[in-house]
Image (tube, rainbow, N blue to C red):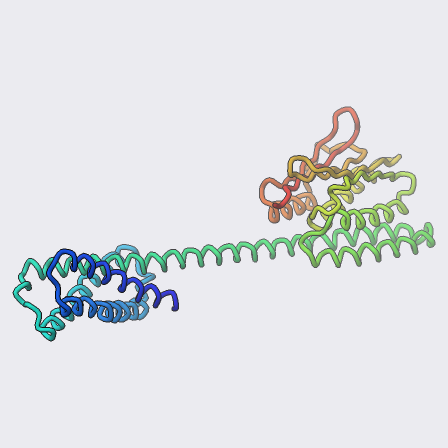
Length: 340
C-alpha cells in the first residue's frame, strides 16, 4: 500500500510538473493558469484511486486478456472525460478564458488524458501481472518441493524396513549357531538402527557419518559371513564432509552382499571408495560376482536410490552398475553433482 501511494502522488506530481514547465515555456501564463494545472494532482489521484477500487471490486486483474484490454480502453476514456469536466469546472471558477474550449481543443485534451490514464493502467496491471506471476511461480516451487519431500519420505519408508528385515535375518541365523556372536550382532544392529533413525531426520549427511553406518553394517555382516566376506574402504579425506542422502552408500553395499557375496560359495570382497572429479562426487562400490543377465539389474533398492538422487540433485545425479570384463567384479558408481 505504501508503494502504491508513493507511486500515485509521485507520478501525478511529475506529470503536472512536466506540463507546467512545458506550458510556461510555450505560453503566456498567469497564476490562475498554474493553479488549474495544480488542480490536476488531487483530481487525478482521486479519479485513479476510485478506479482502483472498481478494479478490486470487480476483480478486473483476473479478467481474460481481451476483456482486460477492453476494460482498460473504455475506462481510460471515461476517466479522461471526468478529469476534463473537473478542469472545465475549475476554469469557470477561476474565470479563465473559455474561448480556447473549441471542439478541436476539447477532443485533443480528452485524447491526451486518455493516453495518460492508459499508461497508468498499463503500469498498474503490468505490476500486478508480474507480482501474481512471481507469486504463482513461488507457489509452484513450494508445491514441487512439498511433492519431492513427500516422495523422499515415501522412499525412506521403503528403505528402512528393507534394511531392518535383512539385518534381523542375519541375527536369526546366528542365534542357534553362535549365541555370543548373536549378542554381538544385536549390539551392532542397535547401533545401526539408532544411527539410521538419527540420519533420517536430515535430508543429507556427511560422507564421514554415512561411512560410520556402513562400517557398522559391514561388521554385522562380517559376523554372519565370517571369512567369506572381506572389505576395504578408500575414502578420500577431501570428501569426508561432502553431503549425500542418508543410506545411499549403505544401500549399494547391502545390494553387493545380497546379489554378490551371498551367492558365492567362497564369498568375496567389497571395496568402497570416494573421490572428487570436476565438481562431481564419485562413490564406487565394487564387489566380487557377476551380473545376472536373465534378470533386471535394477531392483527396488536401486531404483529408490536413483529416484532419491534425482529428486535432490537433478538429472545429472546417476547410479550406474556394470560388470568389469574378465575380472568377475561388479562395479556400482554413484555420481552426485556438488552443490555450489
